[in-house]
Image 1: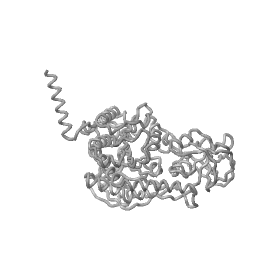
Image 2: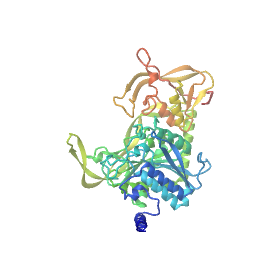
Image 3: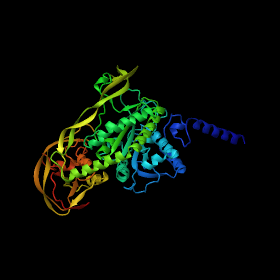
Image 4: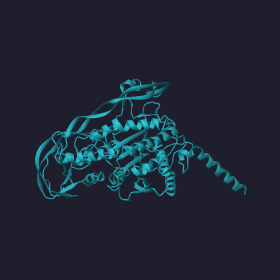
Length: 543
C-alpha cells in the first residue's frame, strides 16, 4: 500500500510539474528535462505514436531508410488528410514541409517541430487546415542523432546532456548532398517528399556556428540566381520581412536574417551569407521553382530560447502562408509556366550562371557585441565576445549574380547509357526521353582542355574544375540516346546538373570521370553531354 501511495504521489508530482510550464501533453524530451536533453530516435517515435493516438488528422509515412536501418518518419497533417499518393491538383491547399536534424548536432528544430505538430493538432484551427497540408520530418539524420553525447559541440549553449553528430552513417554531410544525392536520406527526400508532395514551401532547421549577436533566431531565403529570380525577389522584398515582423511583434522573438560578419572586428564591412551552391538543400529547392527557407538558431543562446524561437518561427511561417496562399500559388504556377515556355524555344539571351559574385541586397540591423582577437595556446587566433553590446546597421551581402554565363539549350543529349547518371536524373524528378531512331543533330560539344581535381577530399570526392570550349558539330546519335529537354518545370535543375562548367554539377562530382581521359595516350575525350541550342523536331519516346 505504501509503495502504491508513493507511486501515485510521484505520478501526480510529475504531472503537475510538467503541466505547470506547458499546455496539454504529450511532452518532448526537451520539455520534460527542463531543456537539458534532446530526443533519441526512440523518443521521437514514441512521441509520434502519442500524436497518432491524440488525433486522426495525422498520418506517418516513411521518407526512406538510413544507412543503419532506421525508418525516417514523415508526419502528414491535414483535415482532411490527403491521399497516400499525393495532393490532388484540385485540392487548393499549400503544402509546407518542415525538416529538422539534417545535422544531428543541431537539435532545436527536432524538439520544436514535435511541439509544433502537437499544438497544430490540439488547436485544430480551421484556418490552418483549410489552407495547408503540413509535412514534418523531425529527425532526418537518424544515424547521427543516435550518437548523442555531451562531448559534441561543447561550445554550444546546451543541451548539457549532449547532442548527436553532424554527419550520417556514411560520414556524409547531408546538407552537401542535394545535387549528387549519394545518401539514402537525400534520395528518399527527393523521391518521397519533393517529387511526391511537391511542397510549395520548405523550411530546413539548423544551428549557427558564426558571429556573435543577441537574436536567438535567424533565417534567410535561397539566393542562387539560376532559380527563378522573381521568387527570390518575392522572398527578399515581402515574405521574409513580413515573417520577421510577425516573429518579433506577435511571438516576441528577436530575430535577424542569417549571415555572419565579413570581419567581426569590422562589422561595417557587411553581414554575408556565403553559401549559394545548390548542394545546400534550401538553395537546391530554389532551383525547383519553390520557396526555400534556411533557419539557423543562434548557437550561444540557451537551448530553451533556441527551441522556443524555432517553434515561434514555424508559427510565423504558417501565419504568413495562410494569409498569402493565393499569391504564393500563383507565383509558383507562373514560375513553372515561364520555365517550360523558355525551353520550348530558347531565346539567344536565355542563359544560366556558372560563376557568381555577391552584392548587397540592402541593409540589415544586427544586435551584436564588440569582439576582440585572442591567441590560443597552439598559436591560433580566435575571436572572443566582449560584454559591450552594440546595434549595427550594415550591408546584407546575399544578392548573388552571375559573372559568367552559358546559353540555356533546347535540350541536352547524354551520349553514354550510364545507369548511375540516368538513375540520378530520375531521382531528381527530371523527365528524360530516348530517341526513337538514329538521327543527325547539330549540337555544341564541349572540348576539354583541362581537368583539375581538388587537392583535398570533399564529401569523399576530389571535386573537378573543368576547362574547355564549345564547338558546333553535326553528330549522328543512335536510337535510344538519352534526351533531356528544358521545356519542363525542373529545367533550371537540369541545367545546373548537366552544364559542363556548372560549379555544382555532375562533372564537379566525378560522374563523368571515367569518360574524360583516354585509356591510352594523353589529352582528353569530349564530354559526353551535348547541347541542342535551337528548337528542332526531335522524335522521342518516354524513358
